[in-house]
Image (tube, rainbow, N blue to C red; front, side, top):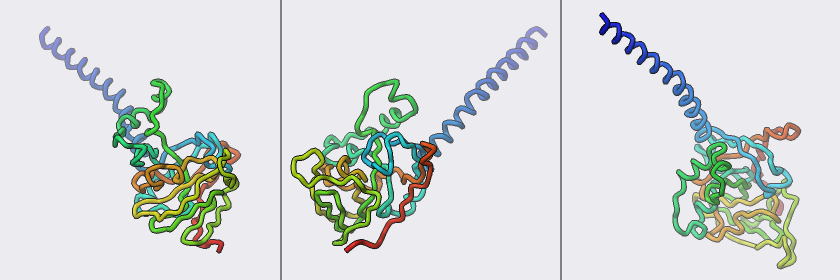
Length: 238
């Protein structure tokens, strides 16, 4: 009888411990699975760390990045996209062909980078505007004004153009290129202060496969909440 009582108590304790384990870890597992599932495949929040998209996007603005649309179609001119660092896809910047996917995954977890300290350039995400798509002949002059297929684009979101005086602080290079298949050409709205396709040494084009999603909604600060979608213009100024 004592033996049976002991075994019965042991089984109850085991079930109790098992239930405690499940009650604690299962909700945690489900929560993290939903968090990462939504973040990777549907949408995530991002903030603006620099002034490269001024004046439309201010430093510390917080945005919703939507990820479903570009799984079924290519980016359009005028869309704001978030993408992997040029240190990931630019052949010159990533000369060692270093794959830091796992390291970036860990560093991008909430609070991890601040705890560990340091910064890995290949783990940064960038935000720019698509100005040319595959097959386009793109010309950017020294002011940062864009011509696509021989026609000047309408860019009402650009206010800060480059100076045309060579060697001054805000001088910019002129480029003329054809966008290859599977790529887009992106620029910051703040043309005088944006490290974008004009400056990347490996060709200057963004592979579509490195785009993380579209910036579609600003949710902070409250006084600037609103839709960020800009209808891609197919009409150009001659």
